[in-house]
Length: 130
Image 1 (cartoon, rainbow, N blue to C red):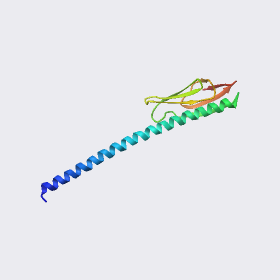
Image 2 (cartoon, rainbow, N blue to C red):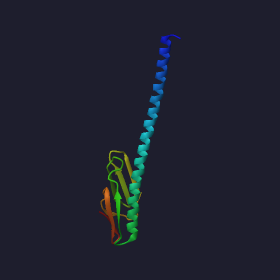
Image 3 (tube, rainbow, N blue to C red):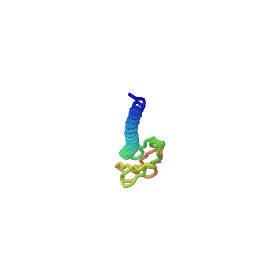
């Protein structure tokens, strides 16, 4: 075997290994992005269902009932907003094309939800978030 043939075979082997690594890294990055998105979806759904559950609990607790709920400051690295309208909560994740909704028992909720600790209270059947 000549030196030039061995060099060509070595280069072919290195080229093949580089192609395999490029394909494997592409698959890895795609799966990593998908799992990061799934984590954001799970965290968003958890925050929204926790709030919906707390609002429903306060509503069913009757006049004078209150509860504290701590929501995350951010979901992943994204800011978010939760609003209430027509018996539903809506979560919007800024900078990421994601929104969620959850049904709640009261037709309306007064006040606004903020990341951090919120006090949810029932005053005469009206649920107030502050």
